[in-house]
Length: 212
Image (cartoon, rainbow, N blue to C red):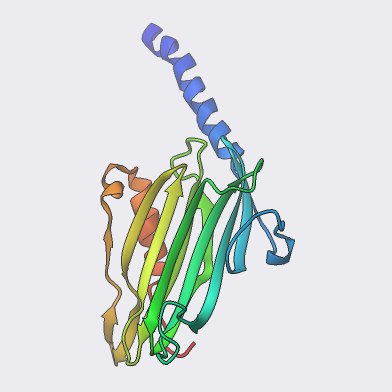
């Protein structure tokens, strides 16, 4: 009994820390038109949010540059380029703490690079007071019926995690193409909750309806 009593302060300390970490995360959407001009970026803002965790307050932007003639190619060639960016800004400054940039270039076919609807989210799955920022997007250059490249990028602080694969498309009744993914090495040391959430996100966004 005495040992149990002695353990009570430790239990309540851990409980208080857990509840404090949960309470620290606050996330609010930010309309693209409300994004301050002082936050330097490339492209058109398509998704934005602001959050506060145990380390401070941050703004996250997802931006897109629509397909246009690839400036790296000779004018007589018809290859196009499209770009995606994501930026993570601290409250006290215009310089991002991290940035994601992906693109498709030299594409003479159907070109797309876009963040998926609700593809920008924030969690604190391990309840340590440092939020995880999730990005889900697709890129493709295709002239046939084939899956797109699909990626999930997650940051916890400065630590980056990547999940790469393809969307899944219907090719016949009960038949599919694509939908598989691989996890980079960073996930091996990640909390199980991270991998579980990444898998759930992939399943949620996996299926692609061509022509949408």
